[in-house]
Image (cartoon, rainbow, N blue to C red; front, top):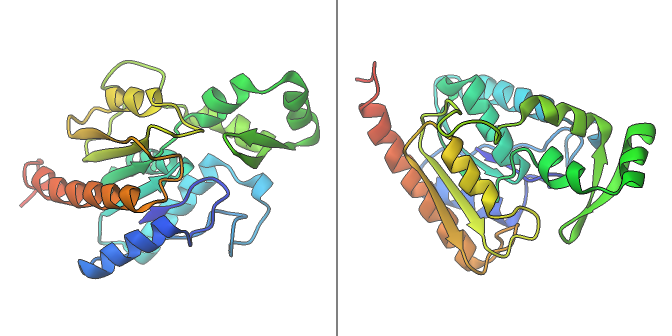
Length: 236
């Protein structure tokens, strides 16, 4: 299941690569637009991490009730994937993060915003914020809700996620620094976690070398899930 980045529609180049991979390996492919993005109804300013996580769980339950999914999350999609795995580990076979940015609302945005932008967000409800080389509509609801789901603070091995995790990250990422996937890897309880670096990759991981690494990470995550499942209590 592909979970897009913030304010990005479900149809992007990475989605095409992942969908073709699934078709070629006879696996189910699933994706959806976030609330208020692309073909989805609603106001993006009312979108929150809580809502996107709940929507993802509901979609998996309704369309693939008897299957575990490998969640491939770009940017905020990586954050949502982690929250789904924490709340419903029975639904998740593995996670592939693509420039995943857990806690970005607080650590990468709010802490660095000028006071006048913070005031506009709090008083008017939202503001256009430049992050990296793009502008995003950042709402008060998103900032305040994000504080309920912060994952990176705390002890090593403190996040109770045991499925295989692969974190693909570009060294040219203009939005998410390298310490984010490294901190996340330390926080995860699973020992089956790898951080895969692409020297030329930016936040969107959108060229052929990036796509090749994404497919490698996805294949490895799937292969390691079967090994993990066979060694887990209760497996056949």
